[in-house]
Image 1 (spheres, helix red, strand yellow):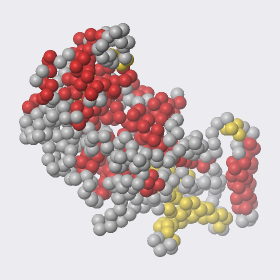
Image 2: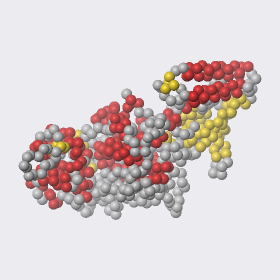
Image 3: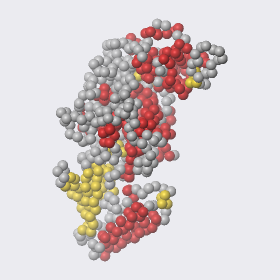
Image 4: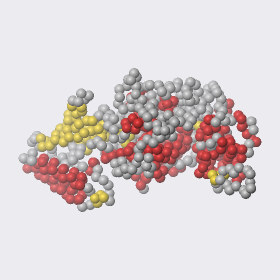
Length: 630
């Protein structure tokens, strides 16, 4: 508990001063009596506030001299205290504005004037309104509107003039907190962006906002090998914020009122535990579609789009043997966006990250460690957990029934399926057919390890282990293995064994790991670098952006010792360094000009994405995690 500080008392005194000043303009006794009553009321409020402890800081929302501002259908913006602007209004939505509390229901009459400054620095009248309550639709995001309220007594005499400054910003909300009509409008706009054909558009193509589709985003987002410009480096923050802005601005060409909502999956972790894929509204037919579609090829189907096409191009940098834009080692023949809640026959019981993991990341003290925590603890497993893997060479459900003690490790093994296959592919062990015509059965186009397959059934566990170790796979099982004590005088190599299971089961498990590394199944789109094609990709990444904003705003001083310096400029991976140019342009209100394109560097994006930046087109609705406090 903290006592009110002097600024709070000063605010109350200022309010009283305004009313005292106001009374000097009133000759009518009834009007003065009304103001005196307001004065007495504020006297009592000041006295009561001085003598109590309050559990939170003074809020702008508590100020009786402020206008009451909210978007129709929503509560007053709770995050207003975090931002530097006096008021925040939303573009293309009806904004409701009421007179300050000190004037309400006092018999006054009111006139409102809304103005804004044009490109020449001149004030331009936008609207003139009257009444105690008004509504208005602001149109231009990142623009400041000036509001002047003139207060008149019952004789028509001007008794006070009050001004306010309105910053126009889109507001990102948790998807469950959207009005039903706004949620429908969002999915309709997302369906418009998902309309792209199977013809791939190169990710470096210069496009206008209305030309950018989910298919374009897939091509742009997909990278493999050790150096993705968008992952495993601090560009994770800047690039995914820009990807989301690109999709938002594409949707806004269809409906300018739409904004990308976020998914706070820690709520689902709290409410549904491991049954999130069955119970979460995220996987409703009219939202993002089933976690395990019952369609033949497991393509996602919703009420707002029956099928999302995957782009096809054999000239693209990354594609599978069918020419479909996906991981090179994912020979899923479907030309649609797919998803399954199965891991090689095993029921997916992977939990969502919880409040504990999220709060752990908020304890990090450098940009780099924060990024590592977010990618490792909050991001990575979600992609595989939602995408799923099926038609694997080995059935993990049957394996688990034969070796029940391996159950805990099998879920982790499934999560690593793409990582293991890519490791083998990069080393030249895993080979995928050069060309398979669309329609060729998966079994005839499966990737494999030819040099091992000719004798696969005769490979013993120790050789399997050595192959996995040489190709960097065994290190991914660190939490589940231990190094047995070598026998005295033994000349054989000591190899890692799995914890808490028999030696025989451990040997069988290493053979299963080798089998999965050499014979990958079909991966859902979210498992791959083309994950931007799954519509659930888009509410997922603002979750991290919102945490980033919360820390950068630092409204409560919790992150005063945070070091935001970009430390990895010596990195060899393009896109990881602060001075690297990223493939994003025209996102902050610049006019589209294909002859004068500037690609933002990470340094520029870090500054432009500052939540205090007036050019930033959006804010978040609140920074509350009440479900984490329970």
